[in-house]
Image (cartoon, rainbow, N blue to C red; front, top):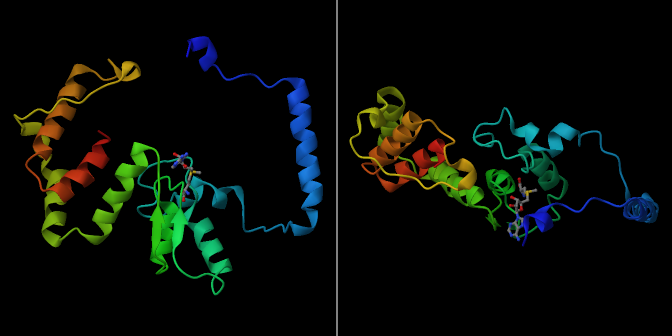
Length: 197
Ligand SMILES: C[S@@+](CC[C@H](N)C(=O)[O-])C[C@H]1O[C@@H](n2cnc3c(N)ncnc32)[C@H](O)[C@@H]1O
């Protein structure tokens, strides 16, 4: 594909007109089904609703739903629902964790690596971290062990991230990754997520 083809095609006025007409037709067809719910504000349907919720707001994933929205639908369908929740577009797992918090088992599929990293890391943090793991994590906050690490593990870059960091930041990230090697796999998963590398 050439860079020219990569550019999004601009919407022609005819196409725009057609979309507006189809939208109006659909709105008319389903008019009787629409219910306006004041609860479903912009905040509650988007990631913004997770801002003050522990864990849901670990990573600002703008495509995520809010946990409140998922809870709203789960409550609305309570009694009419059986089995488990399947989220085939799981993002960072908001629906999965919100369902699971209500005692509903949930499975998800996600295409992007960020979701594939965050979901297992949150599962580990919430379900499998033992008190001595917490103590180790606390030591990472207080002692900053990577600063003294002689071990350095390089990380790969892509074209747009080349030279994105000053050399001392690259060295600090590599030392952080080096120090991580000393930890068990649970701690590694959680701390890798925190570093974003
Ligand atoms: C609106 S977000 C999902 C929000 C999520 N359901 C929640 O509870 O917050 C849509 C997600 O679908 C993912 N996605 C898109 N195409 C996909 C595919 N073919 N298979 C799996 N995931 C996909 C995107 O990466 C994105 O994370």
